[in-house]
Length: 77
Image (tube, rainbow, N blue to C red; front, side):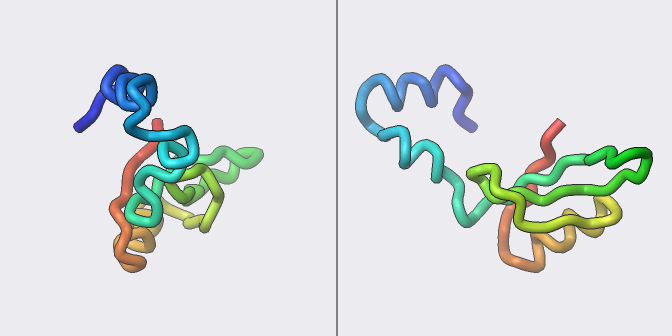
């Protein structure tokens, strides 16, 4: 797995432009994170570029929904 330093090197050497970097992982990766909406927790699901693409009532449901759409789930802390 690449570290932030590796990504910076890719960008600084011109191997990847900013648009390519922003789209890196799309549409193969989806992120999910816990949301606290006024005491009612839930999980938001985001595309690799940060666009919200869904929501789920539980972590397990978010994880399953991402897998169901042939994407790799990644948790955001």
